[in-house]
Image 1 (tube, rainbow, N blue to C red):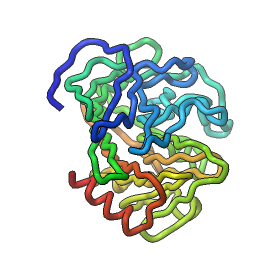
Image 2: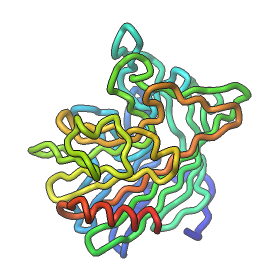
Image 3: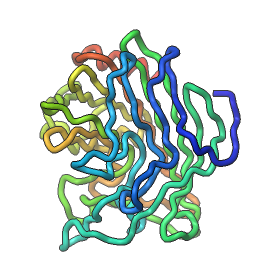
Length: 288
């Protein structure tokens, strides 16, 4: 990535791999405020052109392709939809925030470095984010999307990040990196190096986790020590989605001026991968 840009970019960016378009990055999705507008990747495809993301589906309109979404940043909702309130359950609140693109530091067809502000109530940013996205070819039928996000607390007081799980809803520790996959006629398969099925992999840590649908496989890997310690949030039957959990059993505190960093590398492959090939491609992707 060598081209430097500044200012507000208002058109979607197209990312390419081996000369083929594989992802579009939308800076200003046309969604309602209650869906917590945020830059996202959609559509994302395999090298053969099979879509592997979904945007604002009927079952969860606040699922916006691939990106970073957090349901509780100091009580503000940057996930979209209802907020889980302890002893009340999912509740409609006027607490939705927005991630606003500030500038690209670098931008090329194979990736970018972006600065964003996480805004709520029209005030100063609750968080400032540096987001780095890179596309890497792996094989004739596979490529990797490397996404790192660094969340900095610009205030002079500690800020904490939560989830429905930390607010009283067991098993719902979503928040952080999130990938909404397309819903097919049958639920996708999901597996790690040792386990298989949603019940066996959801809420647990694993070096990598694969989701396989009709004609595609996604393999997710945490590529920093902190990310590897984050449990995976997994859904297959209700809808197909995979994310990492910033706040699984307790709130994540970000000190004044402090930064939380996470990196997730995702292999995007045509066809069905077995464990051996999924593992091999992840190793190549993370070390690339």
